[in-house]
Amino acid sequence: MLNIEQIRKDFPILERETSNGKRVIYLDSTATSQKPIQVIEAMNDYYRRSNANIHRGVHTLAEEATTLYEGARERIAKFINAASSREVIYTRNTTESINLVAYSWARTNLKAGDLVVLTEMEHHSNLVPWHMLQAERGIELEFIPVTENGLLDLTAYAALLTRSPKLVSFAHMSNVLGTINPAREIIRMAHEAGALALVDGAQSVPHLNVDVRELDADFYAFSAHKMCGPTGIGALYGKSSLLEAMPPFLGGGDMIKEVKLRSFRANSLPHKFEAGTPAIAEAIGFGAAVDYLKAIGMDNIAAHEHEITEYALERLEEIPGVKLFGPDANHKGGVAAFTLEGIHPHDVAQILDQDGIAVRAGHHCAQPLHEKFGIPATSRASFYLYSTKDEVDLLVNGLYKVKKMFG
Image (cartoon, rainbow, N blue to C red):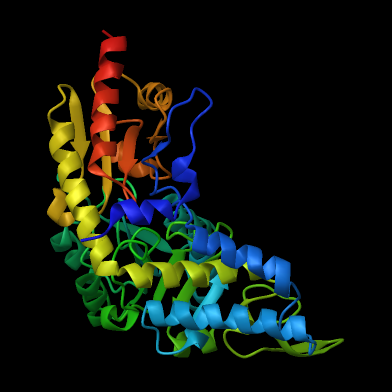
């Protein structure tokens, strides 16, 4: 088991109070995680000691910065068990990673009438790029249904695969329901039908032991800011054979091998997809975050979150008028999305904030999923390695306070 008391000391923000003197109870890690001092210091140290542009310079600072930047990439690749660091492309976030696949691979390989299979539980980041491509190219989109208990209907998925899709793109873990989808099985079925598989791993990589080779994912997208790292940087894993065949996503410096007035030759992987001066400090922070999580152990983190989630679901179910969404704790990560009868989720979140309790309210960039369940919004409490049962108890007490205020 984790030493939560010691872990919490690594996160300076958990010591702060709100303007009305309440200690911060942070239950919004699905939106973004907090950052340990180890990540903050790694980025600060780069700016204080090694700040320079990468790849181009031969002076000491440039070589140090390049080593730190590329060293982080190597550790990120090992963290997800990529075959090579060349298969890890730095992007701004999961959204940009998915867009990279949509703009580069999909616009090269898909034509009018080609089918892309998504799911009803997707984040907007894995919906809008495909809507845009549909409007531009006339591709077809179909969706794996979500059952009433928040699981994907794999029988319906099998039926969709008989239509020979070119791509299956899905969330490994839902940011609303918390559902952990059977990624390996979904990918295997896609490959047997002749399709490639793109996985939105924004919610899974921070919480689960993810092995892209064991999953056999063709593309896998994730973000640093949800896994104790900084905002503004993420990664796209892609099988090297696919990445080699794809055209560059953006043009400019560093993504070229040679430029003439009337032509250019693209750089080798991974630089082909990384135009311009990158987020160097953020990449270094990303690497530090991976080191931090690896030192604690992803299996330990997953076990702790399961215990907290199971406890949270039990406590929330005690409250009259609460409706929970998604499967039971054995099929989900650290997310509890709920409604409180007769009270809008925004009001719930605002009143909880008066006691320093931070939860998310809205459709969580998954508007079609909320429409599926016939609701405009939910309140969402989400947990991470620093979350405690005491915080869950404070959330429950806060919800009773909300009920009392609304009579």
